[in-house]
Amino acid sequence: MKKILIIVLSLFLSSTLMAAGSDSSSGSSSSMGDNLYEDAVKLVKRAGKLEKKDKTDKAKKLYAQAFNKLEKAYKSDKKNPDILNYMGFTTRKTGNFEKAEKFYLEGLSLKPNHNGINEYLGELYVQTNRIDKANERLEVLKSCNCKEYGELELIIKTKGSKVY
Image (cartoon, rainbow, N blue to C red):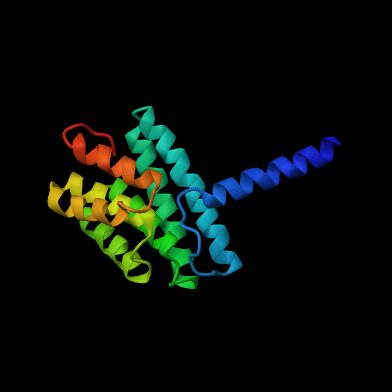
């Protein structure tokens, strides 16, 4: 009975990790690319925890490591907007807004209604003081009935404080 519980729990945790930060219905990718993507997502989550503890230098190092894995994953799966979403996210978190914007826009060219990309691109626009463009991203998310809409809306409303 214990073994069954452990198996069920591990399956649940792995499926939860895969769902975090991704949009369903993205393209298929190779096994190697999947592993690199999963490893990168784990690094991003660890970096986020470090950021919350104001350990930004350590967080940036993890974001850079995640980006390297994502770059390799992208080489084997160029049609996956989730990879581009995280490439944009990790690049933005390390301070390269111009490069991050390019990744987000490339991801949107593959899937214009990708909730994560639209939210994160909106956050980038807030960070770079382009509120009109952030509101455009919010408008795209308006009918999604998703958490990304509420998160971006809050960031736009509180643009002076560092929520993103």
